[in-house]
Image 1: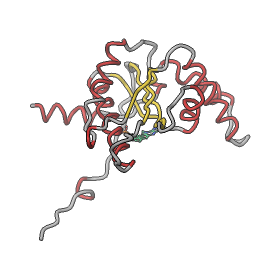
Image 2 (image 1 turned 30 degrees about the vertical axis):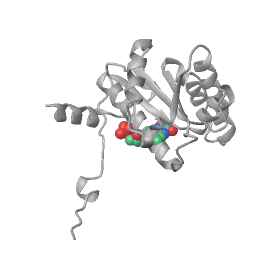
Image 3 (image 1 turned 180 degrees about the vertical axis):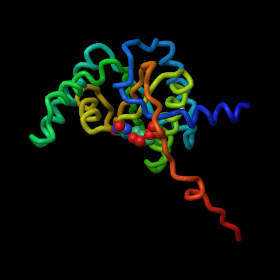
Image 4 (image 1 turned 60 degrees about the vertical axis):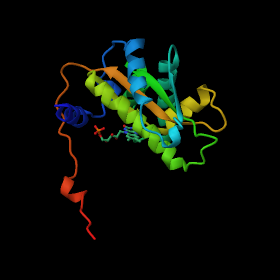
Length: 193
Ligand SMILES: Cc1cc2nc3c(=O)[nH]c(=O)nc-3n(C[C@H](O)[C@H](O)[C@H](O)COP(=O)(O)O)c2cc1C
């Protein structure tokens, strides 16, 4: 049964954007349970190359403003719309925002990709945990988001922001989306000597 339940959680996991969130806070206890599952991810040499920061207070408004202004600057006049600007400004307001900070180990000499792979495992653990709790979530690696974090949080020299993990309780009436993956037959082969 465990395999079937796990398969269900894995296949039901999806990216839910903040437009789908309702105005209900995720409790500190629940956030800690989700992040605790994150930190049980595997890491080569047990480096655990991460730390996580929950953004509170004015950050939601400030991030929204930052993103809206960023897009106003990069969009052409035809691309820019005032409605989009206003939507972007309020976009993060209902979300719980968890900053993903990559902290490569100073001692291990591991290639960076292994350390980033490890933090990706942690994110997947949190993503699946959210699915099992009926909390929507996704990993935002947008440039505006990362620039905002770099401007607002003090990172050590070797640290890097790898984005923000958005979480929020979901609206009840969300339409079912048709999710796609390439067939397994295109992604697996068997090689025999
Ligand atoms: C490393 C990584 C970075 C991502 N960054 C973004 C992002 O910046 N913005 C976004 O809308 N989605 C982002 N996503 C979510 C993907 O677009 C999404 O996982 C993909 O479309 C598959 O959809 P699903 O998660 O619903 O299965 C990211 C996913 C990963 C794994």
